[in-house]
Length: 174
Image 1 (spheres, rainbow, N blue to C red):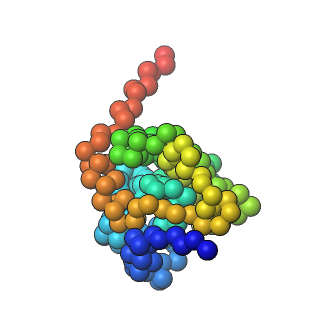
Image 2 (tube, helix red, strand yellow; image 1 turned 60 degrees about the vertical axis):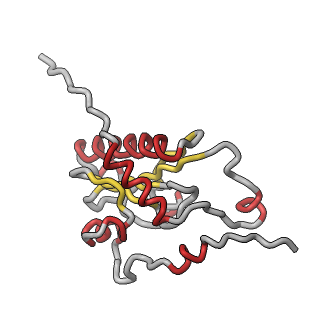
């Protein structure tokens, strides 16, 4: 039998999780007042980005509206636009810091689609050629090469320097 040594995993295993008292984490995490503890890397007036605590790949981000809704249709036009801008910013941020070969972006709407939290959120997952190795296929295990805390440090520092995409001004119809 071969052994897999991933010594860094102990830091992840022993790291404090967000408080068990949180019943609605996507509403309560931004109110903690500690973006590092909440793993929030960027905020806008209507949405925020945070690292997924159960990532598919390193750098897996979630774009979340502050207002708790369960479906895209419940967002105001301004919230929908801001959420899309935040997803675009997340893609630019990950491209600048992690240089992935591609991305998966999407929503899991409803429990049948894999949505485990009813609060609407978008996944921004960086992908690399060959990142799906034998571990998830045969061992039903994912190996992540970086701790969430190290990823937060890197992404939040880059987010502070990266400018949001400037929105095009709409022309007024006559």
